[in-house]
Length: 516
Image 1 (cartoon, rainbow, N blue to C red):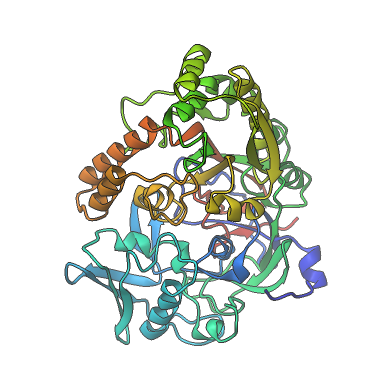
Image 2: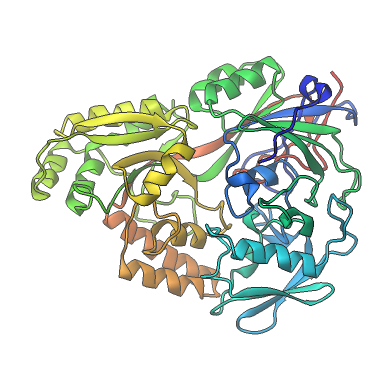
């Protein structure tokens, strides 16, 4: 990873994160009457730091995307509910397994080289060849990518897939210039196409960006930005309240009351496809017993959890999907606490308390330490002892993926890999899923997901997703706790900020700030 000293100007000025063309129920809420100052910079507090030396196939792609650096061929627009052009102007399915994408003309990488079909194909092939594959774009679903001519890229799939344009909207398919791949590690600095160019970083602390003066999408309204990696939610809330940050993403429930009454701060909320989840290791005793998992679910009081820790800013979950989602079961209901039922299920599982089970609570979500304590007290009532360990997600992930854990408190946005549940349902729950934290495997489930991946009809796909969700719920694969809202806080001096519940876009060409 490259290490730079931040300039004095970058430290002393403020940086902004913003978003265009996205949002569910969140609003802009930030228009000011005065004209934007083109010399302004802003500070954005993000809730996670990049990993894997900026490799686009990793979660570092989300940082590069929300920072206004990395761009993709297509883009999912929540307002319109469809995939729209981005670096590709149009696309068409030319055979059962081939899709052609027309590359936007006149676009240059930040190093001055041209965006060409050849460069795009090479960038996407790098993602396909990654040692750790991207969840939405890998060899299991994409056979290959090639430049058909100077302006056309062909994407080929092993079997017919109606969701290729959705996969090309994944931030992991962001396009970098050929020069980004010349060293031993991937270098995005100066090699993106977006409105902001990364110029320096302080590892695990911040990324500093300057305006891309030659951006293809129009005049960039900010001189630059600083994206800070602040994993502590209380700190993010405090910094936007004091003005140390201009935008703070993912504000915890505990910080809302102070911010909602704070001067010069706007709190934005949006429905989010994100559910706080107690992940259960289905491959490890005693959690490999479905009755034991159901017992844990029956022991928890989700209504009290939502009302206390989340202060009413979240709703008890009714399975792996939120009730408002079109693929959610209309019959799904939030489970009610039933201690007697939990004890019967524990007896059916043959459980005898011995060594306490461990819950890992991810520190990036400030409320999870309290959530873990509530779960610990609930499970104590049915004779299941639990210990709690708090960790940053990056530290916990290797053991979790390897199956060396009991329970994990975390949350994942269902539409962040690809703006369709197929990404989440494949990566997280199929037998060969690359993000199967639960270590769950069901042939019946996998068959449904394979069928959904090849189903053209949106309504038919949604019915298959509903069937898959019912299997996950019936097997109590995890305990889905509460459906969360996406909550951002923005200083009133920031203009044209549009909230993105998927946390993919923040800094855009339109983001602006008025003079202090």
